[in-house]
Length: 245
Image 1 (tube, rainbow, N blue to C red):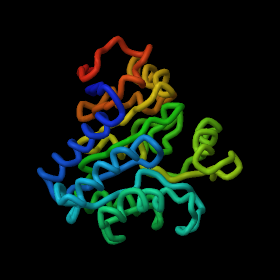
Image 2 (cartoon, helix red, strand yellow):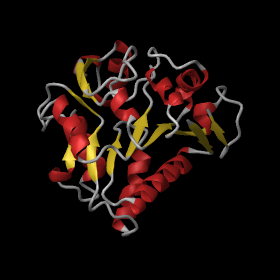
Image 3 (cartoon, rainbow, N blue to C red):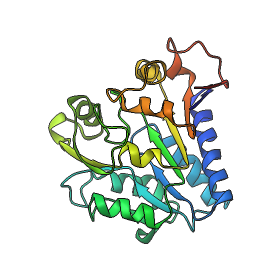
């Protein structure tokens, strides 16, 4: 696992976008996974701007959903696939035929990933309890796509998007940690002082299922891109530096 620290959020997003550009340049038919939430919104803006300027071609890429709330209609405004479509997929012109979610079940999405030749690049956000996707604490490092109960911490975190705890679905589908670990490249985006404590726990403590993101320590193809705010009081490292673990 490699750690890269950028001076600010904008530089962080540009650096991760460069990783996406490099992946598509190397393999236009890449299979990509993007997270939802606030952290990747700046990344999405960079990608959309590049698409409009014809600096990147998403025309052959496939997109696999990282996670989704259970038991929501596709038209529900809380749908994570709808969120990703509004913020990224529609602006870069991706049709439904190249988007793969959980509508046909967990086994089907694993089979789709296999049929497409595996995941090439997975970009992740860091949950307040260390979750990746909806892989909550206690998730096995070899877990596969499945339905999972959301923890109170995740419900509280998600309520910021929907206005109240009782508006957050209690279950979600997610790619498993084992599914993610098979990806050829993995990037964890972390931004803001509010993530400093959990980032420290993910990187400094021995990998353990109580902190799902700590599994990245075991993966040589994993990188963490973070800004200075997220490492304040967490790591004694200077901006734009790299560490390996």
